[in-house]
Length: 164
Image (cartoon, rainbow, N blue to C red; front, side, top):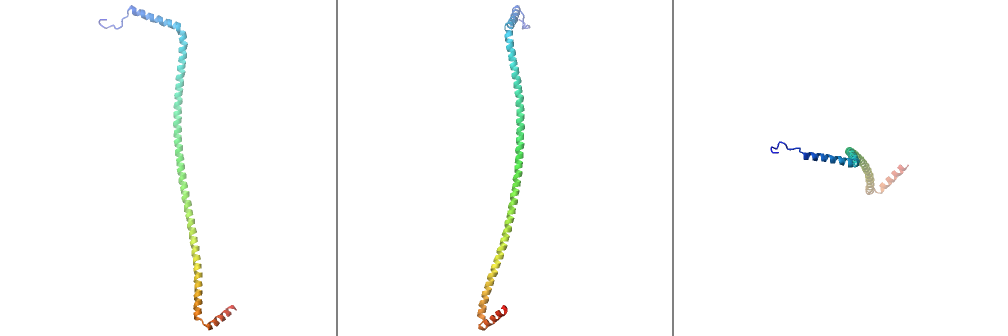
């Protein structure tokens, strides 16, 4: 021990302690081995089954995560398709509404033009009637002023000749 080259020395007391330890292990094994062995085996089976269950759960969780990711992708894809269809539908509806509005406007313009033409014709007829009425009234006044009693005879003869 003085020069420190042998750190572990084997003497008689140590050899006796090793033998004593081995005897103790043998005694414990003989006395408790049969009782502890099945318990240890049972626990080993439980631990093994729990590890297998955990591994199976981990696999199931991975599958569920993959399925959820796939469902999420599908949902996004469907949502995009729905949005695209909605935009197309909205555009079609807008075009249809504009077309219907234009057709309605054209009908209204045509109807208005027809109404204006009718009003113009009615106004023209009324104007003609009024002008005719005024012309007759004016002619009567002029004739009354210009025609004397001899003129009445001429007119009456003319009327009688036209009547025949």
